Image 1: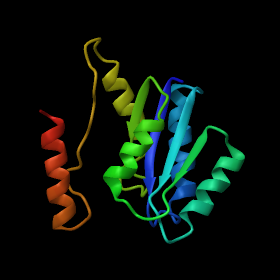
Image 2: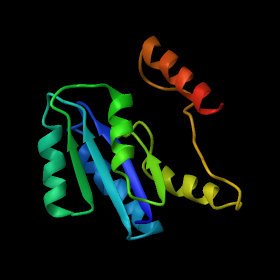
Image 3: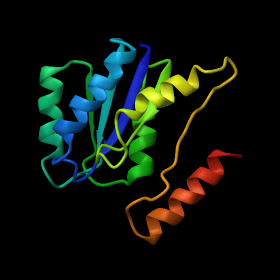
Length: 144
């Protein structure tokens, strides 16, 4: 497996179909050897049903379902534990970040032989103060 794409689902049902189409198109520009791991974090909407419908039409889709909400961090870590790719791309499914950014990250990763990790942050994010503080802590720890 060349590429694993990992995302979480929580109140994501309105976005899943478009996310799937856009991330699949972006991935196929790079390789046909990819998997899309969807971790349903106990979402109370129809996210799980939408994810299972994608699995039925595309066996590259892997669906992991939490019986209750454990939080974004646990969902991402679980998705990472299932990832089989030589490369892993983490992205939220709510389309706040553009799935087409996969190309940018892929190109940057392969710009030099000594690059192991490429990540980006948004200049302006949606979300409240809690999300902003915990996000900042995550990125500071990630940079250690």
